[in-house]
Length: 77
Image (cartoon, rainbow, N blue to C red; front, side, top):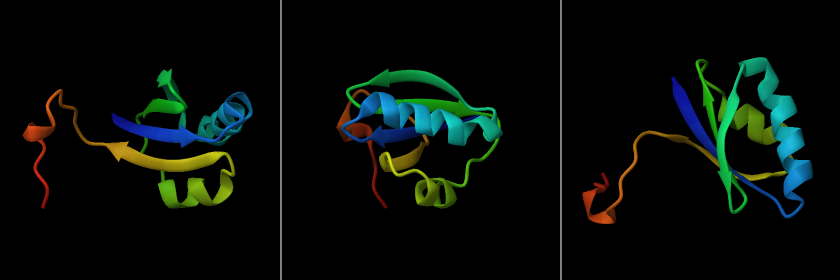
């Protein structure tokens, strides 16, 4: 199971509709949304570069690899 985040543009509802249409071929489901950010879950690996090229309403996107409640737990390489 893969999880991704998408930071959407000002016209949130329109951007969300566009994103849902693009994600339909990956059988992805929106698991949460807050403050212009949508979190999506999919059994398939979504090619973010290709999706960002096609999605005009997505400002940033990335794959979630973990979560933490304390930034001191995060290690950078």
